[in-house]
Image (tube, rainbow, N blue to C red; front, side):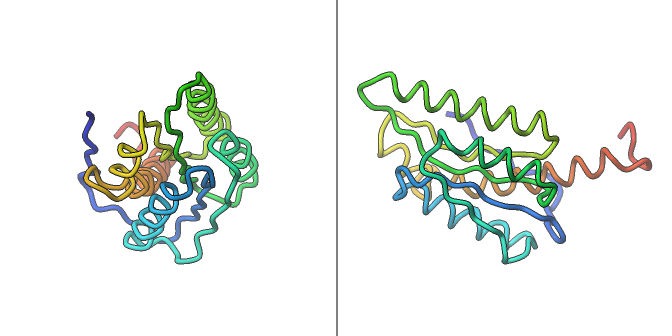
Length: 163
């Protein structure tokens, strides 16, 4: 299993405009991801008024993310959900479409879309990654969003071109 490495420099989300898109399907997993993400954003200075947009499931996340990214209202999005493998190929279709869609939104809009959608083999793995023994991937996605906004801001600054 991979291990998350936090940014070496302190993250400061002060003044950043972030929103969360969260899937309701497997809500018992998504709610702890959301709590972790919102707590992490707050700890790093992002305003306490972070809007949360609930969608039916992970498959619907990219469409709402695209609408929010194209609105110009947000510097980054945190996308949260849980797709748990079952006995049919449905898992592969939903997980693949969700991941590809979120990536496409980020690439076409230039707005970072942090991927906090769990794709696990079973419920135990999902619970372990949503605040259990394996940490909280919602927290990691929130930190990723802040880090990416800061990096893109540095890349846009003439003083740091080439750093």
